[in-house]
Amino acid sequence: MQNVFNIVNYYVILLTPLILYTLISRMYLVISATNGKFINLIFALLLFVLMTSAFIAGWFNMIKSAVEEQKQEDANLLIKKFLPGVGEYFLSSTGAFLISILMISLFLLGGYYIGMHTIGDIGISTESFTKAFQTTESIRAFVSSLSVEQLIKINMWNLIIISFFGLSQLLIFLYLPALFYKNKNPFIAFYLSLKDLFSKKIFKTISIFLLIQIANIILSFISALTGSNMILYFVFTLLNFYFIALVGVGLFYYYYNNFIKPFIGQNIDIEI
Image (cartoon, rainbow, N blue to C red; front, side):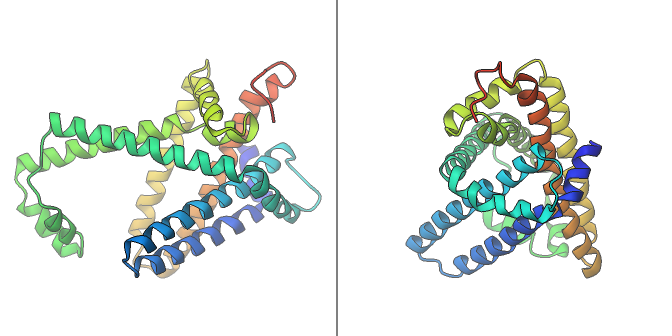
């Protein structure tokens, strides 16, 4: 764990593409949302997918290099790995991104159907639910207007959504490392990632996954509490970026040292 912190602290340059991507993508989505024409929204969504794929390809190529060459003479030279990564992994990252979105969507859809058959409809219109979250007062009024049965159903629905979403995330947990280390074909990489996930190290992998999820929940909760204070909000925003970089480096470091390095020269799955 200490090595992961050391890598991120040494390669602080990793935060630069992450921050720029976040700012640009959010601005782009806000601007795109102002024009409600269907064809424009489809075009905007397509460009967002391509933008995200380019970021994934370049940024994780930087992370891969940082993990393999833990200390270069000039840490800022790591940024030179971004564009070559886009050129080498763009199509792979696009496929992996779309496959991940499809898998998460299918799991959520499956959770919805199971919920409708086991829990049933809550009895709240979409319009009422949307209006309820406009202000703090409206949230309180909305919650107080619900019956005990409705509150139980909402909690059960939350449990189903979180469970199915978490399971889909677990299944793609090792997907990107497998794509960058083993095979550029997104379909083969997905198969190899599942093969690694359900290996003898499954409990260790799940433990790391749960640790990341718990840390993310705690950080999100603290950020929500400090949202009214601009200074604290800014600090925790930077902390969020640092946490994302830490997770990315930690995931690749774990994968490289457990599924790549010990088997170099003997594992036929390792191709790149």
